[in-house]
Length: 308
Image 1: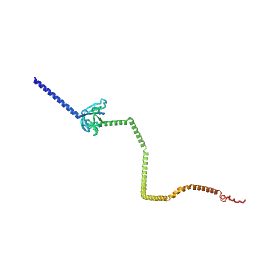
Image 2: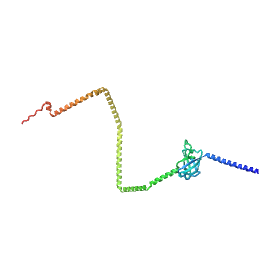
Image 3: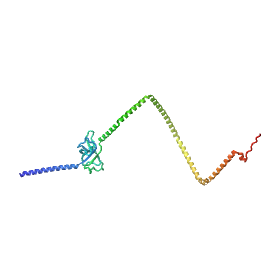
Image 4: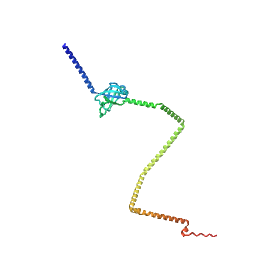
């Protein structure tokens, strides 16, 4: 009985040690795995149709992890929170952006990470969030959908009842104008003929004008050297005359200064005497015109005797 009890104790101890070792190995593997992976959250503001748990996460086209969980934001059900499990050495920076992408037209959706400049710091959790949150940007499919929605809205406004009525009125006006032009066929032909003749006359006038301008240009080009030579000669003479006048002024500067100082002072009295002389001469002329004999002889002219 004692030997059998020893075997039971040894077996129980062996099982306990094996169980402990297995648990230790699982813990070590989990710890090593946890050290090799980093979790991030991505909040999408658009539907994530086709994205599932286990979908790939790529960084510039290279797989760096998977989607671990998808759920709606409890505070705003329009947002979708995706929990990502990425490699610990994945260079997720503060300027890294996530968007929903798709491999081809029929491929499965996945999360695409882009950006991450070399000098940007690594994305770390903050006080409000234990898990770092990667900011998102609209996907290409979302951009296409938004653009299509805007185009549809514009088409709706363009094809409104009011615009359709305006288009119909415009077409009716065009048809009326076309009918009026068709009814004035003879007048239209005459107008076209007059326009053609006016165009021919204008072409003839332009041809004559071109020939006149060409002749003038040719004659002017021929006369231009002669005109330039005459202009040079005239300028030379003008320079010579200006030099002579300058020399005369320099030679007579003393006399001119004397005249300016003394002669101009005497010019006033001389002009006054000249004005008095002119006034006296005017009085003499008036008296001569009225009675020249009396003015010259100092008495009246003798009267002629007329016999009775």
